Image 1 (tube, rainbow, N blue to C red):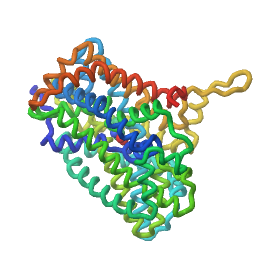
Image 2 (image 1 turned 135 degrees about the horizontal axis):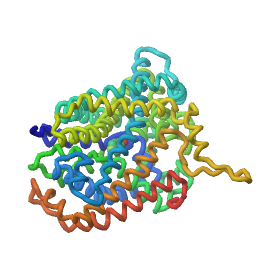
Image 3 (image 1 turned 90 degrees about the horizontal axis):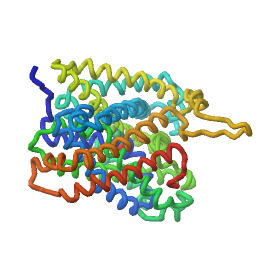
Image 4 (image 1 turned 45 degrees about the horizontal axis):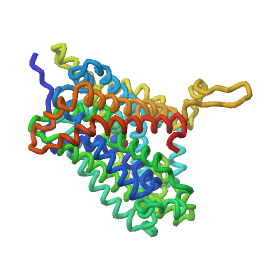
Length: 492
Ligand code: PFF
């Protein structure tokens, strides 16, 4: 039977889908806070250097592997390598774990859209912490929202590369951008917004103004920037291999990689300007000490910012709807890319057996599988409902003298799955991939693919980076991730 895998309708569609995958919750609740806390502009410079020497190179390699083999993650590794065949499987397991909790977070965003809509129509506005507390301690409602969020993603991916993912991205990403600009304008025009801007950009300001008590060490900054860069660019998850496998030979992979890396970083800074000044302004207006304003993680998104919207009355609810829809789009465009990695793998497998893979059934099977696990994460409510406790005690040992030791520094199901995916599988996968390309196959296997569609050459840069810079950086990032999840304190 003739293989018919489908392809992107246009290079622009591909770029928007890849940027959509990269732009996610990490850009909104991770990057701005880490940047502010870790030296502002200095952090940005470190991040940019890592993004160019490591992120860009890994992204180009993944796209090239996908386009060269015309296969998804498992097929690509099998075709290219003898020794590293099995690494592709790491790239299937990791997206699966990530999906299991990312959809719960997507469900939270959906619930906050609904909360703000009801407030717009006159429902009583609760404080951010009251809304958040009520949400996470209601497992059934969280499961329902997780289900709805999963269903939305199912319908998109079911439509295929061009008819589903590309279509959503070409409408969703520009819409996200416009909404972000609207929220930035509001955020920057609030009283004392400048304090938030200074927190984000001015080196040392976070400490001198009292947001944090001491600045992190340089090694800590490096490891924070590396981990964030990797997660934010959606690398080592098979996404760029998968998306690259649907790309035409005429497209310029180096240029595309550059655009994606730049756009992801640009949107992360924009997201920072949308959230941090508003959060700081509202904190100051309410007399909250700067060190007590929550500027990162779920607390930023679902407590601090909701308080900002509530404080603005009806207009605030309107901004709330716009903002949480924006976050929802960011979450959806990331989740669909993760599902597609697994779906493409099964479709390729069917093609290899000369069968026409049934996308509808495959996507349905994948969604049901991760949805089943996500129910546990939803029920756990970020640790609020005690679902994690029995597992926590399995990991905990109590010595004869009563000292309790806990080898894993995670305190809910979400953190545990994140530890497996972001902490171990992602950096390990990228390390092995760079060793495979740099040493087993040799960069000359990938270079011709990077030459296709362009006259531009950067071979020396690529060879040095993929052979030496990327592996060293990946070992460092892996150790950094392990130390934060397992509490070794190596990078304190
Ligand atoms: N890049 C996304 C974010 O910043 O939130 C998260 C993500 C999506 C990571 C897809 C990895 C991935 F494969």
